[in-house]
Length: 113
Length: 111
Image 1 (cartoon, helix red, strand yellow):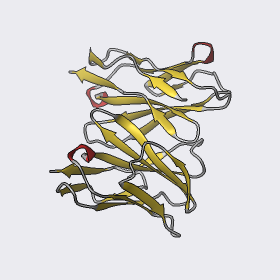
Image 2: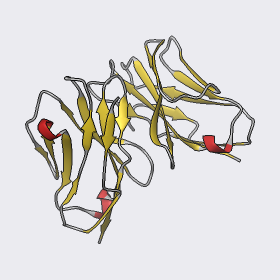
Image 3: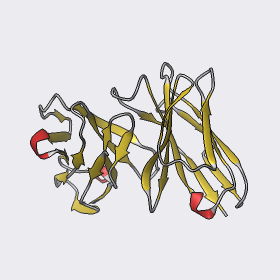
Image 4: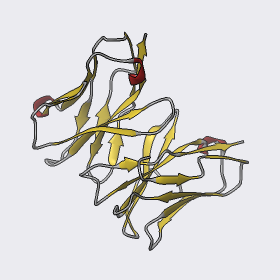
């Protein structure tokens, strides 16, 4: 157990739907990062939150949004889902900005049918 | 822009052979951190090693060792005496404000 908790582990949904992925960071970590891993794009950075504030955005689609709550857990919202959104979504946490390392959760596997 | 290149797509070895994974990176930063992660078939990302740009000392940790050469922007990783449980995808990553991952190298260790 890495200490980073992601729920759900698996999600199957239809095109056009909206889903929410949840991440609880490791105790003491203030940063949360979201990554998408797909077969054709590899591991892609989506977004970074630090202590509730958005710090950086990567290749995140406008249909996707995220937030970090006061208790530091984070949610990634994916809407108007397309087949191409099927991927493994990872959350990672770090104490600061990651120079001391990132701890990854076990991921949420999203399948859009 | 940050970039990490893992030229080897797949490596297959027989148990007890050594495996060296190549990683070349590009960055304009003078301070940066390099990582190796392992992704076994179960899918999770497991942290292996971290090295900062100021420390070019190469180390050995158990069966893992790494060779960081700033002059050639390379950060290679070696598994000594490989085991079947080492079969996984290995990712090299570079950190500035986020982790930029290479495409990964799939290592298959055959019994």
